[in-house]
Amino acid sequence: MKVRKKLKSPKILNSYINIGNMYNNTAQYDSALQNFNKASEALKVYKKEIPKSDLKKSDIYLAIGNVYNFKSEHNKSLKYYFKSLKIRKKLLDKNHIDLATVYGNIGTVYRAKSEYDKALKYANKALFIRKENFIENHPHIANSYNNIAIIYSSQGNYEKSLENHFKALNIRKKIFNENNNFELSTSYHNIAIDYDLQGNYEKSLDYLFKSLNIKKKFLGTEHPDIADSYFSLSKAYNLKGDNKKSLEYISKALKIYKKFKNNSKIAMIYNGMALIYKSQKKYKKALKYHFKSLKIKKKIFKKNHISFSISYNNIALIYSDKKNYKKSLKYNFKAISILKNTFGENSKSYFF
Image (tube, rainbow, N blue to C red; front, side, top):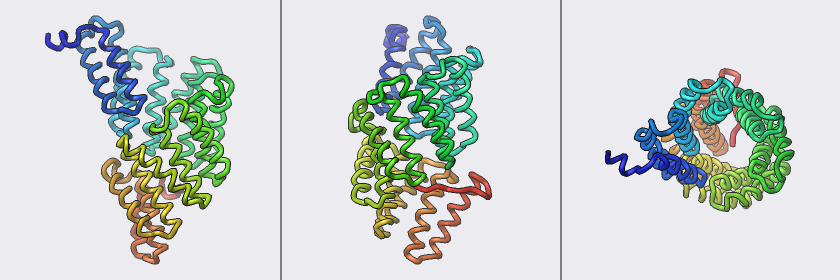
């Protein structure tokens, strides 16, 4: 009874969800979780008074999964996504559009976990349902192409990745104002990443700045997505040999990621800073940042996560440059062991 009095009305449920979404959209993840958990509490109290309460429970699970996804807590994210999916599959038609949302989100988590076959499986499920429900040039179909492209890029298949990114971009250009839609910034950013990985740095920089200019209109200057752009700009400048610009942008990215305590991104930044210092032959600093990155990864990833192979490979290269071949071989074997475990004997890897 005390809980009922405190919550006052079933309407409080939607208030908690709306507030949680607001906090999630502004990267205040702990506050978002607090409000989604309050929504779960309210649902238990007012279950009989709320229409379609089981679907509402699914919505809350999905929202909690989204928060953990943004926090890079992938196993927790999957736990809540599958809870949401189980309810929706039980209550909805197999091609209901609300299933596509969960499938798509599950795909993004598996991609982050380097489980690419599973990622493609769920991303394609989402695309199929969206094509069944929407017209050809619809934003949600563009989102599916974008997600599939990112998975291919993570596998190193940049041709397939760009093919899907441009499908997404062409749809978005047909339905949105080119300079005033956030989804266009996503396409521009992801196309830039593929060009960067192909070694086309001028095209990469062009698309990165297009993306950044749109993001700033929507997000301001202190959002994790802005940090993503700064990090990508740093990479492109580093590969062009402009270390000054590279350090400038990576430092901007680190400042934002630290503000939001995004440990997986901080580890990525330390790895990037190490590579910049390596290119300057500042090996002591380079090793310092690689080991800082590795220390964080050991706290947040399983021991055979693909990310460790990146760190081990890069550490091996530094020891090789220092002519410490014994240590170089040690870390090379660590990297190769993880790649074989993930991709098989004929694996290829792509670093930074």
